[in-house]
Image (cartoon, rainbow, N blue to C red; front, top):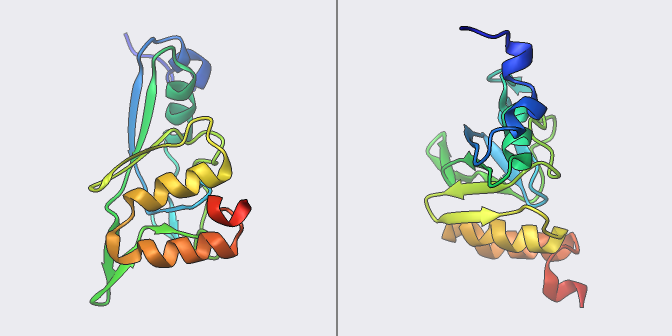
Length: 152
């Protein structure tokens, strides 16, 4: 039996499935936990698909988990660029808002953002960023007043 996408992708239907796991990819994440999976700045790359539906459904599922996966760096014109940034690139589309983001995964680990404060999110994301970019991300977080040591 096949169901309509309006039913299958509805977060409240997904949330009824205990231990539901969603796995999605992204282009970049900011230190607040906002996820962009659709564009590089204003340049459109992909559609939303059901990402937010499945992120929200898994987030609300009893025992559920939502994973957004990305390499910690990408290469653009021969230069390494972090996929975890202080803010999203100007014009980037927010595919998953920070309030719905659960787990961000890179090759350096997993950042559990569910229920975390802004500075806890920044710390967790910097911990899984590429080591070459962590010091600058800390400086950026301090300037944004979302690094714990700058908030005390």
